[in-house]
Length: 202
Image (tube, rainbow, N blue to C red):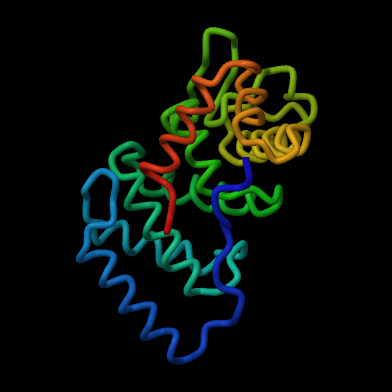
């Protein structure tokens, strides 16, 4: 299965007319309530997104950053009630997905299914954190805690990319490998369903 979409948009620096376009698009997003939870962003969330944009170094331009962060923060909604943590997760996902050449929205779908965005989630098998990384990977991270947002997403994206390559671009197989359920379709289908229903950006 090919990649369902490209995660990167916008390759030119934001021109003066782009500022007006950004404001217009954000206004349309807000008016339409572009959120899986049906929530409008609060003034506090808007301010925190603006602050995050000041150092949004993984984005090609401010337009992409404006739209992606606001859109995804809004979709994440009440699942991550702490706005600081919400922006931290999203910025890290975007950065590490870009580094691993993965769609950021696919990474969000994996996190959604794996941990429901709980950085302290621990499975019965001992997998930890947002992307449910197994403890034996800790050595690769310099023994950093797997509940650390940045370390967990970095390792999760690296592992997912390795499985994607091993599976020769087949997302069903790559996701099953990631979950340790190779040969079964239930987990990959959950992730792809969540991707299409909540995170996919047309």
